[in-house]
Image (cartoon, rainbow, N blue to C red; front, side):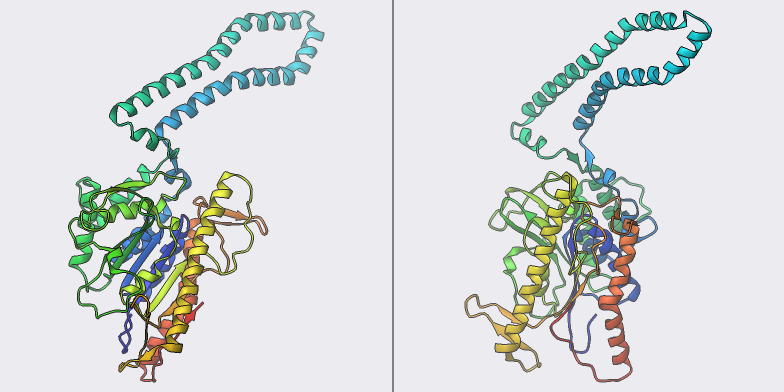
Length: 481
């Protein structure tokens, strides 16, 4: 929204995994309220809400057939085909031990009945013993085959698969060992949904190459810039090789001069035909949380310090920052920061196992980035209000004497839950052990919808109503936590 002072509003979505469902609920509340949003910023899984929200297509995430109504751990983190084959061989090998154990258990359960029959008809147990002795050769053959065959076929599979990878490219051998999970299914789904938004849901043609999907989607937002529902867009990913964020932007050219918060060269413009294909690659990093999934490999555009190089990119949670600095750099005076991390998250319900360890690590990364950005923004606001000079417009501005960058005071509203009900990897929902209440992704989406009103919309809509009634309007200042 823009008030009579010309404030530019940005919404920043930051988080990992299940946080995307919370983002979808907040996006739904913003769309229903009809507030004016000028810029969508996405970091981590937040790239989904930012990308679809910028094209007025949030229903692709929260609608009746929205993405977050169909997400599950099995659908996102599927084992690679090779690992699934090896797992099947392992199950066959395990049966070599399970089948004899099950037969022994069955005989133990039937033994009282056999003894009763033998008492009524002497010699029955001798017949059972002879029948079991006749089965012994077959059981021995099954036992040998169940142990030897998986080992043999597993060895052949690894031999031929490794040879095929080495024949195509020796460098790809290491890529095959980076992760056991295959994200191609969810990535294809994202490509399909982006293509439907770019070309319309009634199309019958199959999604083209991902580069074309990114190019068409960026073109859609650029062509409709300034139209109702369409917003500027900033997407963040982690560039693992450059060891800094990869940031894409698509904003209108008619924006007023802004105070700089980050170097402008760090933001690649999606209006550039060489940059536009990267839009899909950055959106596809939504679930590539390291080290659970392999990073994506992209070729950077020729301009810039790494022109033409192939770099690995992953979910932005691997890097510091949540997107606040990019929003400030692009002229946002009012920022709505959306995070599924509660201010006081409390202890985790599950604290054992690999999944719990990975979830705790991702939650720690997300919380560290959010709190660090909020502290930095609060510090800059204090500096601006203390030593900044007042401009003719009534705004206060401070210029850093070391870097020459100029900063203004920024109003920040933080939309966050009172309590973190789901962790990043709880894509199948979770049960709170303290009260045994089950929370699903749809419940988490509804929580985001309620928190959007509680933390921002109720005050913003009341402010608009107050202004429409002719009452004097006073711009808020500082952080609203």
